[in-house]
Length: 131
Image 1 (tube, one colour):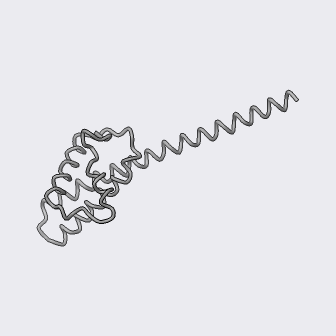
Image 2: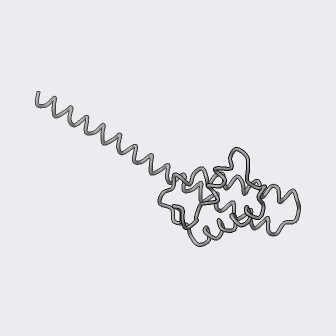
Image 3: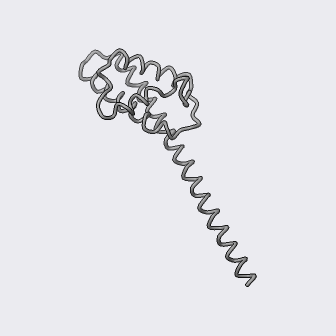
């Protein structure tokens, strides 16, 4: 009986350890994946803003604005999962430029995904978690 209790305790302990370990690992990997998505979004905004400042062809601007909207959506969606991110000065400047561009082009943001796009614009502001 003593051996059976010891075996049951060892199995329960192993099962709990495995469950907690896998849960913690999945949470960590999820946070890393979300961080990568947010970083990718910030970089896409930077590329789009550079192209928008240099291009004068309407179609090119439209494509870059679509990319900008997509990147804002990406950041707005994944940024809530990245709790320990600290924005660099470059990322902060990029997001400030995106806010300035969106402010100057109010028709840019809208539609059913506007909430996520606006959340993306808030990324790397001093009052938000990413600053």
